[in-house]
Image (tube, rainbow over all chains, first blue to last red; front, side, top):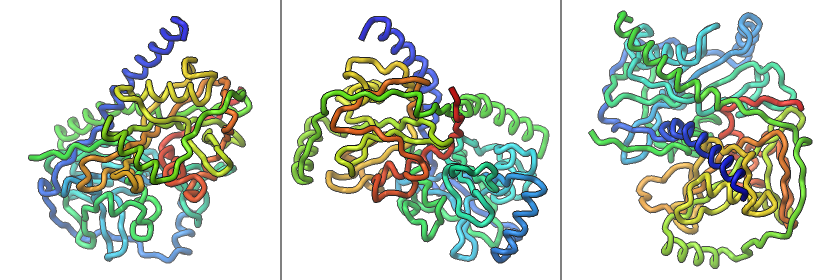
Length: 222
Length: 222
């Protein structure tokens, strides 16, 4: 390889390396033991209990009023048995959800996610969750039409998707109190149990191990 | 939320935003049309044709000599019909591979990937591929033992994995010539065809749409 090409190549590598240092830093995630967190409960959270057709009607009217529905969800990780566990909200035994929810019109991803984390996991929506560090978006799913499945890409020829769900890695502080609505449980589910387990956790949560696969985890002892 | 808490929260948001600007920038990927690339061929590349038991013996002896086997693979994207396509090497009709291969002892991920890209897709290993921009690692799979499957996480109690495969997003320049070994074809495969298609593309390549899901794609016209 000629000197000039090598110089160009090296320059590109060093340029990438500076950005890579940011990225490499982000690829390490500190996980604190589940035992370092406290769990309390608060009044039940109202959950829309509707049949699919009612839900489609509601989504259609929301779409007409506000356009694309964007949901933001947090992937919160803790350490247990030296293995990463994801915190999931469990509702009525068989329904699992990531903490998060729908953005309000004009709300940014981070603002919305912090609001939802506060409403789902702390005393109330106004209590800041300053200890949480909202990291990068690790995945995005699209719903082309109101009824259909969600896809990790915009299917060809789909110009106006109806819903977008974004997953964010959220780094937890070493200690945190979670205050969970009485009609929910907060569970720590191991990556190895989520993996390929679409039947129990659905098409998006069962993919979290792959979305996290690029990260290396520091099992912190306190 | 008290003034102080709000200030803390805002400070944290702005701190994240600066890092986020780097990350947001990386979340946009320019895709150039397949038609802007040229394809040539070169002498065939020797492919190890061995039965599984021979392969396990070879991997065991390599592991004894060099420890963890690390492979790096490139996810190269082009635009076709306004939809992202991944460039895959096809061997003997039914075998698909990402361009890449095994790192040499002491070689960095980027150096190794560029060497492999040059050997698989350009005139020879010494012709730099300076136009390629090796971006972030988008996924990592581990092989706990010599025979077993690969997992997108280190299974619990596995201290000494035998192989690690890392996928990198590599951004292509607007023009590039690909020179492909005669015994391979270079195909542009749409994300929608890779999606959930483990039978044809295997357990890792079929997950690429999910690993790329956080990115937004600019379909560049030239």
